[in-house]
Image (cartoon, rainbow, N blue to C red):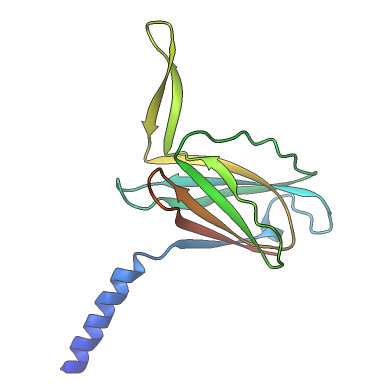
Length: 166
């Protein structure tokens, strides 16, 4: 009888902590459309869907599509000024410098809208689902991409990991 209660207790604890685990996925680069392993310079275009089922819960990210193209990436990203952001940190197998990429959070945005007085004002928009596209240079040394949610007044929260397989 004692063994049954111990097992039941362990099962309940495991289910409680199981809900706290961060989501992870694996992307095999050989399955990416138009990816050529022999090409030296390739750009990956990755589209992600972000959702938040309940207000206050962690965001959920899933990879929607991935395409590759030949070329060298130019750093043309504009700075993200809004305090709600998604930070993507590439993790390398080697000791390369990990430069985070910052994206506007698709669930928490601030848009400019015309005011009846003739001025343009900024208005906050909150959504339960959105998407963003990420472009990055393909590198055989990248092991994974870690996604963090950045919100004002809070520490960065890791919400997703995309493991890259080649």
